[in-house]
Image (cartoon, rainbow, N blue to C red):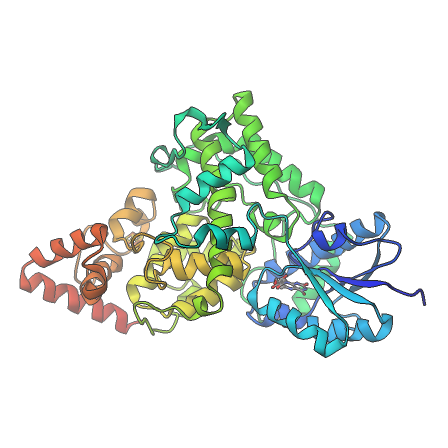
Length: 509
Ligand code: DLZ
Ligand code: SF4
């Protein structure tokens, strides 16, 4: 066997040829190890489509690396040498190759970073963990930004990232004179608008093999495996993004918060699963968006809104994750302890909005940000679901979900379980918000206009009950405090009806 200098371990969300661990390596001297391992697929029971997507993309990436001249050991799930976990697989490879060093780029999860730390002792081989420079802001840079600040506001961080990347800048100033055009992005959609479907791909031989494997091995996981239409190759993911820029991005800004029954994608790009595993480069796609704006095919509110999600929110969320882990994981500001209702898995509920969001999640491993934040997330917070259970749910059901991005979005943004580190107020809303932004309520058995009683939209009583239950923690919040004062003006009898309605509904969960 050829001797090996270093063992370069590439994880499932590191499918980028320019990855730091590869860029500093030498394809003639080093060997790449990639593995499909049961531990990663089942530490939370990921959606079948998510596993199929990732395994297919990993297999294609191994091919891509081989074409670039790398020696790749690709250990498929049913490979005879499969050891079941990253650590055991790395130990096995160290025995085979006796490398001088193990080289790896920073992991996306704290849990895996802890594994890296244990490897030197477990294998007897030193480990180099290299910065993941696919992110615009490094973990250290974020920590330096956060140091000494009372509040970690995304908006200021975002402006720094605009300056750093030069995206949508007009010299020193933001393009168009404003940093943020969100106020223009809150229109409701109507079903007669033309909405392009994301670009879909046929199954090649690799995808066919993986689909059969997932069907066999992960049959008991949540979600529909078919139809499977995701891109699994870099070239196809890039084409899917270009399709979005040409066909949907012009309308993305206006309708990004809208929700329609039977329209899971609207004008969204549906590419986070590609970007988060490394098939798309965040900076490159933002440059592509800017170029479309400069060419005049995309309005500024859409271009700015999209770029903000990528270089602002996405980077900020990652910074928070690494700044606050591991304690962040157990945050539970409201001390919510309720179990996750079954309908998060079955969609078996009379609430049309929740049914729609869960059904499409099951079918597509996808829901857009407002469905996640204002339907399933909002419901969970109002109903007092334990944020850790909800976090595991989001992490497992969405194809784009990795802990670094999903956890702060769930714990911080959606559940306010960090007590307001990330969000300035809880994203709590009654049925009126959902009714304004969607067409769900029209086909719901509940009446969104009623506050209490068996036919009332459950979000309504739950909303007021949530405010009253947590008044100690919320009364001083400038935005929510005002709603608590509104509640206090309700007659005693109305307050009693709200309490009774909320309790009756919660008892059914
Ligand atoms: C999400 C996931 C799944 C389902 N399976 C694998 C796998 O078999 N092999 C692998 O390398 N990565 C997988 N991943 C992604 C990892 O969980 C992800 O790379 C780490 O959690 C990031 O620290
Ligand atoms: Fe959802 Fe309430 Fe509207 Fe029904 S009435 S769809 S439960 S917001």
